[in-house]
Length: 127
Image (cartoon, rainbow, N blue to C red; front, side):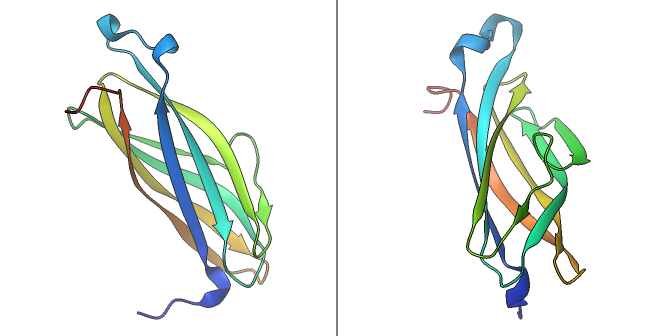
């Protein structure tokens, strides 16, 4: 499969459970996640929109669409990266997130940067 080298954006995400904001008895499990978006292409690219698919431990799915990330629509130049931290609240101790960013390259072409599936998990929730 051919991939245009101009539009190479790699996304890495990692989640952390926030015990002090969670309440197990009420089914409130709070996570932060840090996302790093690396522009490995040959053109600057602007992040315009985000799409998240959040699945809890019971299989319930919530979809989130929005402009940019954390109030920004950053332009990432080749060889650079943009990192941000945000949060998610689940009703279960485990879940997953995945999605994509809609990007606009400096040449006017739109493309999607995939966000690989990553886990949300309260420590000790999985054995």
